[in-house]
Amino acid sequence: MYIMNILHNPQFNIDKVTAHYTKKDGVPVHYVCTSDLDESDRPFDIYYRDTPHPIHNN
Image (tube, rainbow, N blue to C red; front, side):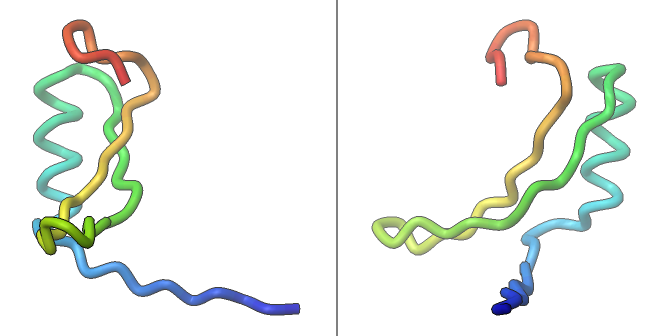
């Protein structure tokens, strides 16, 4: 059995960002991962909320 051990290197403090947007939006916001697109070579932290955003959806 192969176990993948991925170490994410978030750009921002996950606890602060999730707390800020959970309070701001009134619903739990969760960190998913940090991803980097080859073309831009700029990493982005990805977050998720259980309910669709009222303007931008999920």
